Length: 209
Image 1 (tube, rainbow, N blue to C red):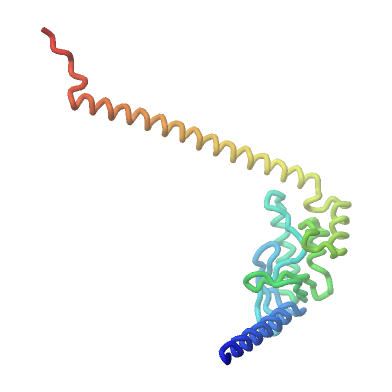
Image 2 (cartoon, helix red, strand yellow):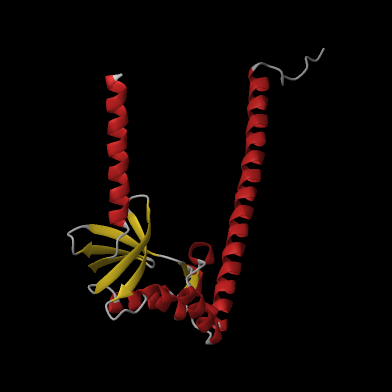
């Protein structure tokens, strides 16, 4: 009975710890961007002496085929790296990655800036209620920014078509190689059978009387 009570008490303490820890992780914090890890992920040193990977909330970055990576990284390195930011976590993903709204110290909303520049698309499945992001996307569309620019769309479509053609070519080559290997296998097996018949005298000439 005593052991059961102790186990229940331990579980209760553990549950409280996790609740408090989760609450602490989702509190708004200020820190310095030490590194740009990806188009949508930063490494931040917070003022409470903790460091975390921070991922941008509510958007999907332009794909590689849309060829905007250089411009995106230029913006992040020039405007964000080494700068002070305010991080407002929305949730904590595996590995304590903070999926967050990110604000520059002038109170500019970075997530919104990236969408307004056409460097990212609003992700309504994640941020359905974020009107600033949805309005930023409408603005980007109106002004043909980034991913909404007709030239970028055309280039992305051409890249996609070329990639598909290349994949089909590779598949065709693989099928041809497979057919060739199968044919060579049959020839090899036939030759081996002939050698065995010769070795056993099966191919010897008939005796002439």
